[in-house]
Image 1 (cartoon, rainbow, N blue to C red):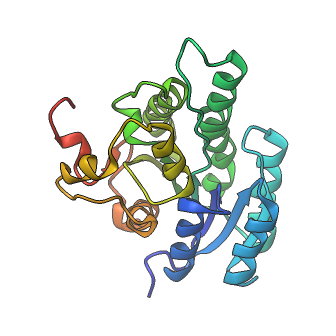
Image 2 (image 1 turned 60 degrees about the vertical axis):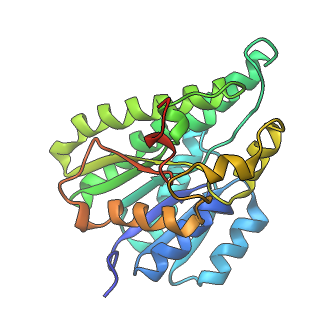
Length: 253
């Protein structure tokens, strides 16, 4: 028996990185999954690898309400219900406040924060019809501690905390739980790109000072997300779960 047996999940940003890991782990735990992304070839390949009985892919721009309606329709048509939403899609734009164009700042907020809010909004009706559900919003340790050069990303991830808490207050009456997950450094293309942007930071020295002196593998985040998606976390809502190897436990945080 898997901890997600009988459940249907929609995972955004599922074509690569953590989203791909979440999709694979959810299927291994018994869920049927719809993954959405704008990277169509990669997303279709992930779904094909998991098989049509377990996974479907849909083109999904999380800033588009029409795409949200379409993605949820795929879940309902293919698998009959929606129990879980993982708001995983996100982008990172590096740049100082002085140098970042306004349109870049807005784009990060639109994808990371507005996209998350739209997901919560559109999941309410099908989850209520299913008798309840679990929404897991992927934030970041940047939602607790901002970094120079990441004002847009940090703002979006701080904002996800607010959406999560407010939604938990509103949706508990429908049996819908809402929690946020805050990863630290994870071995994904986005994380590697962010590290390269901070060329003055010595990765080896940085990691050496962590309680767990390495970056996380995506599956280590996926296991936490699956727990929050499952009935094992039935009394957790409006909460923030950190998976960062101890970064935020150190001095300065």
